[in-house]
Length: 280
Image 1: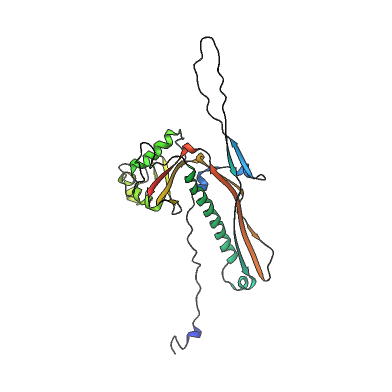
Image 2: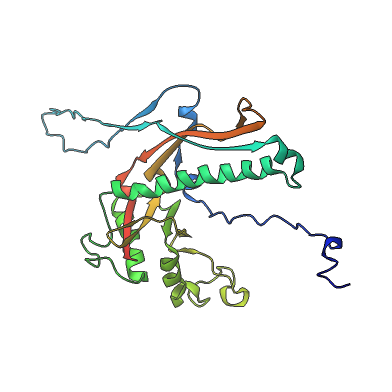
């Protein structure tokens, strides 16, 4: 006998599950969260703006001119409703070696998180400034990211009185590669105390007080990558219904499952975020 004639005696082996890779999601944890305002009821959040007052000289006669601020508001509609749904037959549930319901329940959570990440990245289109074309910038989207362009984005945040803390830059993998090729980002000579870059082989991805993040989900428009540099309060996210798995009524000999999330998002401080366009 050989392995052909005796094939019925050789068992097949089903090993570990090979799960599809999930992207890392960053923005939801790095924006202004209004979840508490959205909890319980309501279909939108209205947030009044309070502007600064002006100092004026007071004349000798003591007369006063009063300011009359004309305030506006930020409105975030809680109208984003997304769900993930799947069904499994009783027969498959019984015969499967693997915990199918649990595995796909996790995937449902990742899928909904990806939708939020994509929505927040799309807020680049609401911003009034692009570092590529702003006064003092390169005048057009550069092909490669460099330190001068990176720090120009920081300057625009500074010009907008953006606080120095909680600043982030999210970019495409290609832009991250550009940055990693810059000696002043990777060298211990210029990054004292940043974690022994050369000896450990790891590069601390923060520069000039800005945390650097990368995702292939960065939006593309007119052949340009729309990377974003922002402060935490530049954008707001309000999750009204958090992700939870639900089993629906049975449909014949099938079990039906779904996960849903309800949220709203928007721009809150335009001066504290800037598009940093680069050629793809």
